[in-house]
Length: 242
Image (cartoon, rainbow, N blue to C red):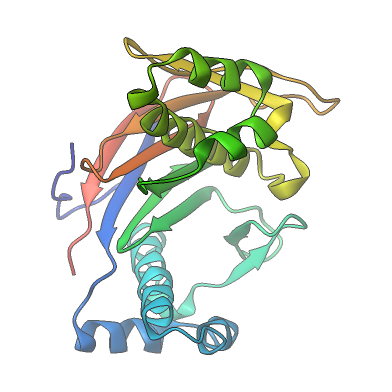
């Protein structure tokens, strides 16, 4: 699924690019990433007390800047970000809304980045923990249909199904850009063993984003999902190499 990117990388209007990156990078690479970060990003990194968390943050943001520099044709350190009222990072391009949209997620040492031209997107990756008390979370936060789906499965399949649902729901929330204001039980995502995940409904007064869901394969220890606005797009999956 994950291929080496072409030398001449171009993002077409009918494409969504997803990048998979390992955050365990050599010290000299980490130092280069750190030099590309803004003052506020460095401050956020310094507030992280755990050295591993700090390294992963620097790598995660450094890789984001390098990836976006490919598409924008600028230096990583020159990229400016701003944030929506719901905390979603977007490109700061002055008075013009950015045509390039991006989203990112990480779990342990793996990170995913998605980039599109003009389409709202959201991505999520989850590390499958075991054992894990998924039932309490699902019964409290999930929609009734989702919880019923989990309960109908054999016990041996419920944990994996929980993480699939969680990744899909997080990706959809990110694509909507509403943050925690969109409660997880206000929409339902369903799937079965033979069919991919799909949005069943969304209950609120805000017009629902017409989003397509795509589950991504990241190895047996992870689950991941991508939510993309609209139809008529193709997925390109790239492996990021330092």
